[in-house]
Length: 429
Ligand SMILES: *Cc1c(COP(=O)(O)O)cnc(C)c1O
Image 1 (cartoon, rainbow, N blue to C red):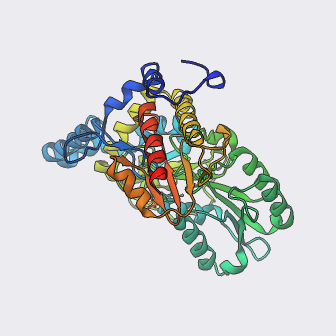
Image 2 (spheres, rainbow, N blue to C red):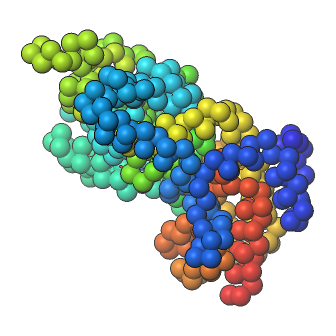
């Protein structure tokens, strides 16, 4: 395939077809169930930022565990092909590859908001001098609620202890230099820097490395919420060095509605059993876990934050999804994603209509696969217009369409069709 820098996009259906025929990942689309309309026609699905598509193998892997349960019942914990007591362990390596971590730094457990709370129990340790949390101003609502409730629960006041990193007046994106200025001013009062990556609304990807270094320079703990990034940005968590990260697996990781979340705890904390945490038996060392009378002795690394024995039926689809990621190779996925989202950006710019603009940064290093398109004076009828054409994308009040070409199952033709439809809808306005 052409190198991205030299890729000469063209605004024609033939170009889109050609790009698909040269795409080394094109066949991965076959591994997913694509949603259909009532006439069994495939829909164009550009909503992987909300719920990723179902890997075909998910059903088999869930069935495998239902069979184990039916046939060997409690023995499944040790005698299933993948013993249930080890199920989360086989997911750790492929998950770690996607976020750029060591396997011991990653665990699949609970759900995102729950993991965020557990991480804040450990890494938000406010003192009268240092009790603030810094987040981006347009944080996902759940993150913002979680952070405020933690501040409140520790006896502080969110009105005083929450600092927002905001875009400047008249701008949509946050600037790193403004974060630097905030840190210079408040760094010594901040206990935790907690950033979503990439931003669910604008699609802006914040630099994990720079933000982590900045936070650590002022003695703060640093955490990231990768919900919108995981599976489509390079997080390089181990190298970049944040203290923790959390994410969900039902967006770009295609593991099913409400699927379990992922959690990263940096290796530097792996053997520190003095870190305060909420504990449960599944975080206890395996060899003495079932000897129920001993004091809590955590498994080193992220696994030591587990509470409960995990829901195997919910882990089975994650297994199916992570197999696909491992087979495709994460760097190949990123490479395709840059081209695919770049193509969408090119096509939208070709529409040349000053009623629309893209909020997401134009630099591919500062975004993942999502583009957020703002439409002047738009309302939901625009979204309905896409639905009528069999195109599923995501509408955010008041006037933003979020389009997320997912590199594992979206094609250049999907993206071309979406842009054509956008052009038509604008012409009708
Ligand atoms: C999707 C998303 C969530 C959802 O949290 P759940 O606990 O999985 O319901 C939270 N935060 C961000 C940034 C998200 O993108």
